[in-house]
Amino acid sequence: MSGRKYQLGMVLTAAVAVVAAGIAAIMVLDDPRRPPQGGQAAGSGEALIGGPFTLTDHTGATRVAADFEGRPMLVYFGYTYCPDVCPTGLQTLSDALDRLGEVGEQIQPVFITVDPERDTPAVMAGYVQHFHPRLVGLTGTKAQIDQVTEAYRIYYAKQGEGEDYLVDHSTYTYLMGPDGEYLTHFSHGVTADEMAERIRQTLTSPTS
Ligand code: NI
Image (cartoon, rainbow, N blue to C red):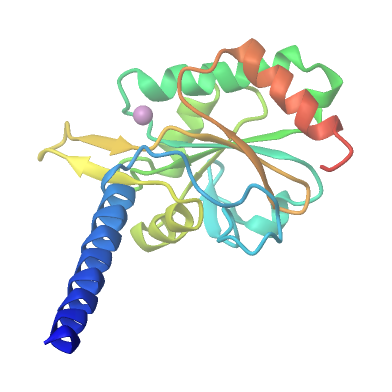
């Protein structure tokens, strides 16, 4: 009798644990705009943000992640047809670089599209020039964009049909180090001053 009760208790405890784990997993997976986890410190054993990619820049040249190593990189994911979020994000990023002076000149700004269907190299070329003279636009095949967005934990999803569809997407700006390692990220809504200050702190702190 007590043996069965004990067994029943064990089964119930296990069931509760499974359900709790399931709910936790759903909560994490369900919110596409959750702050990225892990990557606080390169080599911490957490799953890291970033990694190899092969894409095409706005001049039509093939670019791989290693091409960008040797200097910090500020990366934003979005698309040129984005009505207002992407222009705001890219303007903030560009203003932050300008505020950083010489530190900013060392940083490579990169815009990676989540809409490769419409964002051809030519479209990207016309777009990036509106923001920062050194901004590099990257596009690719759907498979290449899926690969790089997965590596950077960027969520995106096409909304609607026809030519005027929108693309819902994560709006983080990532600061990557000279070895391609994740340093920090900024959420949408950060001001250029805040971004500049945190970039300066991150790049000049002894641990970076
Ligand atoms: Ni956007």
